[in-house]
Structure formats: structure tokens, C-alpha cells
Amino acid sequence: MSRSGLSVAQVEGFLENGFVRVDEAFPGEVAAECRAVCWQETGCDPDDPATWTEPVIRLGACAQQPFRRAANTPRLCQAFDQLVGTARWLPRTSIGTIPIRFPHPQEPGDAGWHIDGSYHPEGEEGGPPWVNLQSRGRALLMLFLFSDTAEHDAPTRIRVSSHLEVPSLLEAAGEEGMSTDDLAAAGLFETTAGLPQVLATGQAGDVYLCHPFLVHAAQSHKGTTPRFLAQPPLYPAEPYQLERPDSDYSPVELAIRHGLGK
Image (tube, rainbow, N blue to C red; front, side):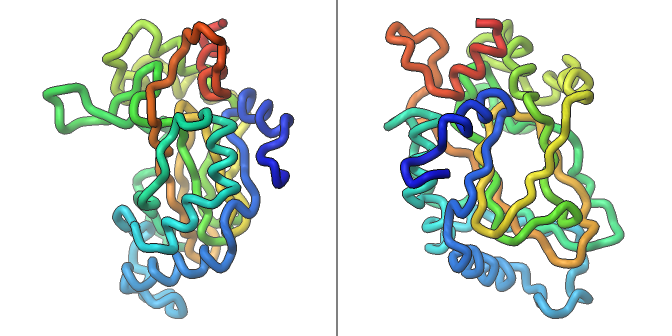
């Protein structure tokens, strides 16, 4: 990523693959501050693996100042403008949930393939989240790496170009959309099973910016050092529009249109 933002090749890669890694999106020292907060919240000892008694611990919204700094760097804001559109997204006031994955013999129980939903229909409070063609409530899926993450450190698994398979399934559902369980029943994960897989590896301070329809999955930790990652949505300031009179489509909108054959 250059000082002026994502390169043309990176934006094209986002359109085709469904994600782009922004290297050094926030400073490594900020990542270290965030890890220190997380260790304190868990009550675990970073120097004593005997205290790592669960395969995964999830922390809440994490709105402390280091997390807000990580989420709103100029480098990231420029990338948001390029992928979502200037003035079409909202700044983060927290980093969202942080799943900390520990080396542990027990399976985490949350490693299934999925896309992230963002809302429930009116009158429904429980059950799986929902998603619609305009990606209501979610402009991007983001993966913030707060620790160095290699292939054995439980990196998120990504199915490359899977975002292009989702729009055709959602089109008939209209504004109401579908639950993520209904998408699974419609065969999304069988359809995308043969796609190439990429692991979201990188250094502390890297961020993966992903299309909201990208199919991804967690996995168990096979390394030695706990992995710290946040996966917040970038919230939209306005709904995505798939029929713009001026054709001023963002890359996210263009990808949805491509998935519809437009």
C-alpha cells in the first residue's frame, strides 16, 4: 500500500478475490498496547501456558483508546474511502469482539465456514443473523491482527472469490434478505468448497479488508503463541446501491454487481 492508498492492482485484487491485506495498517506498538489490555481482561498469564485453559476466549467490544487508534489510522481511512466510497462509511468507536485463540488440545467448536450476517428481521431477536443483497449494516468485514500470525497460529481461512457466489442467492430474497442458515441450506458452502483457500497470516498491525460476502472460517490453534485478532464490521453511512444513475459504484458494489452478472 502506497502513501496515497491502495494501488490499482490491490483494488482489482479485492474485486476478484474478495479481500486485500493492508500491511502496517496500524503501528506495532499500538498492537502491543492492545495485547496488554487483552491479557489483563482474560486474567491469564502470558508467561504461563498452564493458565491457558480454554481454546478460545472472547472479549467484548474493546473500546479502550489503543483499539480506537488502531481502527482509525489515516492509512485505513484512505482504504475505506477507496473500497466503500468517500463519506459512505462510519468511523469505528471500538474494535468489536476479540477472539483470542490459544494452543489447546480441545477443538474450539466454532470453526465452520460462514459469512457474517448483521441484523435480524423486525420482530425476531434470536436465531442466526441475516444478510441481504445491499449488505445491510455491514460495509466491510475486517480482520485486525494484533499479534504475529503464521500458518499454525489459527489464522482465519478464506475461500478466494467466494463473495461472487453470494449475490445470486440473495437476489430473490429482496430487502428482507436471508438468514445465514438459509444461505447454508441453499448450498453456498458446497458451491464454494472447491475454491482456493488463503490463510489470513501476517504481522501485528496488518489488517485484512474483506468483502462482506466473503466465506471464511476459524480454525484450531496448532502453534505455541496465542493469537489476538479482532473481526469488526465497518458500518455503512448509507446503504449500498446497485443501480446508481451516475454509475459511481464502489468496489464493494461492483463486486456484488459482478456476482449478479452485471
